[in-house]
Length: 331
Image (cartoon, rainbow, N blue to C red; front, side, top):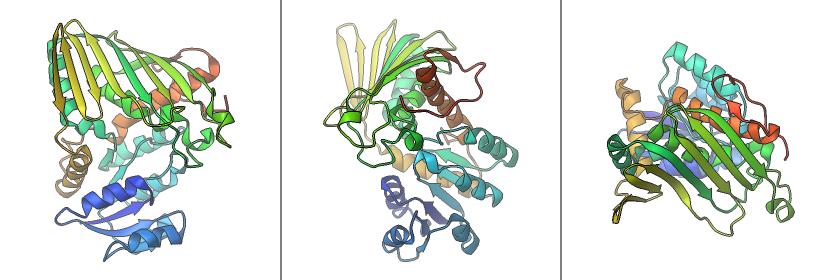
């Protein structure tokens, strides 16, 4: 199986390294924003060729699958090029920062193209354990967190390129909430540029935010995020039910029932799992084990974009009625 990569950042390196340890998988192409970046990555692989243009890469190589690992603003043309050639793709979150994913999802549905989106929290053993525990209780409310520092790459702090922290990072917690508790039908957000605008030149993303959501099943959830901390901090989701509290963090699950507390550590690598499942689906045509298809990830995209729209308007946004979202402007 021959696989190509669009993007040369951390996610490309991570996925390529995992694929390099799989039998029958050959990483043969890298496309970067410059030939220099693409060649730097390609040199790490015996059979890889560098490209600075996606169309050229797809025309010159017969690829079985492609990984899209680019910033939010760079999505759209890449996905359309792969759709035209019927090449399955794995795309890292977020899908974009505009309405392009809606049309892309329609074309995927029309063609039946195999896709997977990198919401790796769905593939954690701890998430599956939490899901089974929820069969025994009814969640009343949820609290989510992504409390950290600011990634020091120029595009991330530009709201027009990243969409902001809720779109670019906290999307993982939104998707986890959907996966465990069900669909979201209303969003109300409050964001602000509190500190980082004065500390890091070019910062237009909000650096503090709170988003309250109503779920179809009646659950009320609030997810907080900030990028003002000096180091990465609390990331996770807490679920409150009539049975107690389930706390999901990066590598820890805490289950609190009265005075009894149980803790479980993550024992698998969800990045490996999501890659194995995607490539198995490409090989066999069986997509049943893919936990985040493009169409499903589109629902998470709608929630995060609605949060941006709510923060701009100061009004709650109904996802039952709101099918289009506006681009984020400077707050």
